[in-house]
Length: 473
Ligand code: URP
Ligand code: ZN
Ligand code: ZN
Ligand code: ZN
Image (cartoon, rainbow, N blue to C red; front, side, top):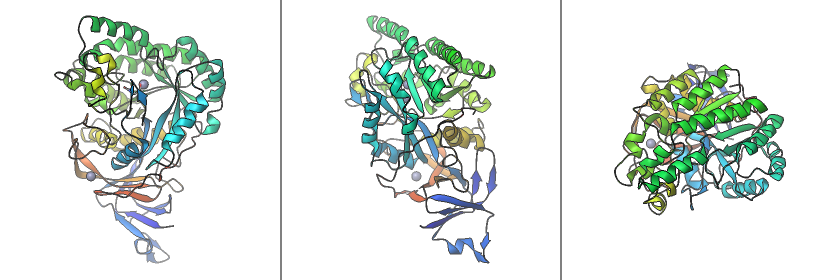
């Protein structure tokens, strides 16, 4: 197998940074070396097959996006990125692992839902991938089937307090699933919004002729996120289940997570770049139907109310532990447009899988988080939470050589025509200018992005059988 030396860079981990050369042997990291080390008297650089010059650059573990929805059927259509296009876009942006959500739909067996997801992904991914399991129909049969998931390498499942009639579970169902979570050690992931109440509010708005995308954000009030988050926390407390609240956007809901953690409960929170940068007023409230580009749930929140600043603060203080994208892209044409005249029919989701590492690096540039925290939020903690740490999430001997060379002096312009590789006819991030650039990406030792060239291939990515975690992040 080929050997590669990544030389002259600053290797960054969740706990520090150091000038070091990274020796990659085949698919794994062999050693971190003092810059310019010799081996039996000879320069290491002279004895490897390839040297990547990382002078002046950061060498970081590849990003782990713990929340994506490739090819998700939703609202009468399907998320526009396939596993092929979505993982390629992820690679371009320095993400080398995704964890996608396999879906059990209403009336379906969990085993069949998981098998269908394997079929979609197998042989198509550019980078390694794992699955969480969406449990969309809690029955005595599915409660039994859930117990078999860890054996399949799926150690977490998501439930929905939102979307009645689709993925929704009531409190009785959630309680029973959490009991399984407690018994098996699987992580309960929660979409925490009070769906039944939101649906009433949404109907009332539509009855008043308030049908624009903006009203999606009004119907899905922060009170509905705070309430559901609190309810999920109390059910988790009662059952002893570890709880991970996904795509958090309301500062009041994050305060609930912080409160639970202060009680010593194993509760964790995830936010996404859209909740750090975008808002109800500026994006969702765009003129006409434009705002549909930013319809997602939980919704973008009011900047006047200070949610975005609160999310950054929570990331800094570890009240929130991870940043994923909730990548769920839909084109405007024929997809988002299904909701012309009724915001309830706009498929929910934003595409960001390509931009997470860049967008979060801007938090370093702006002084919200440290370089180390950037790595921790985007790679190390997802690896720990989701049972991948050691092989993923860190550059150390024996780890998979999933490595990004990031140039802090580079620049990335985000936009539809210019730069993005996601299968979308627009970008939710059009016009964002990034100080920084993903220069080189290695996936298990193979260079898949080299400057402006893409060298990866579909089928390079493998399914990751994940371990149970202790959830003590
Ligand atoms: O709007 C969103 N978040 N779409 C994806 C499905 C989900 O709830 O995560
Ligand atoms: Zn959700
Ligand atoms: Zn999601
Ligand atoms: Zn580039």
